[in-house]
Length: 280
Figure 1 (spheres, rainbow, N blue to C red):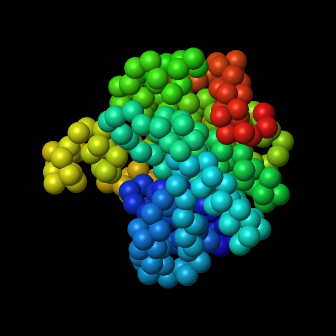
Figure 2: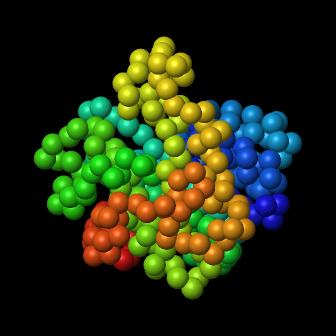
């Protein structure tokens, strides 16, 4: 991985941090895309110290803001000329429905639409850097929900956990459609369930008070286990040409029947392009 440049979103904590540290340990140049500059810089220093790899960089970005995403991509292009691995890891959870500055429901905007926009804006440099890999994090719970294209932003009703899971279902549909559109380019796109991992996000979803998180009461496996499949998909020669698949425990497994609906995926793509001002 010493000649590779990798960008990981949400890399200051949890699965993203461990993934970034693992890639840095393998010698890759690692770019941490983080919402909070202070926490991002702390993570950068920790990863560099733990791995002895000084090629760890911070790229601040609020993924709920399309303007911030576009500015981050502009700064990326100003400093880097290649990108071999993009890992869309960041996610958030909120109990009450809220809108972003772009007037888009917050969970949908951050957990899905940011993946769509950031990936689209980085596609050309990834094609030029091929072979390259896109890795998107989702959840096994996507089997429990369906996507309503007429209410993607949960304006009719808002129940935070299903809203969160639907945003992750959208990630899988996007990944499969992206893989189809990237055929022949040398860029692969896969998605995964990292496991039930002890992160602040899990604590929020399970409504565990802050002072009781990261205790047996919260549950969940350690972040090191959650990073295993993202790192595998980013680095393993065994999946170098594999694309359009969903993984659990470093193995390709079927996702829900709805995720294979190509018409649904195309319509989601078109709606997403409209919401982000990107060409279809």
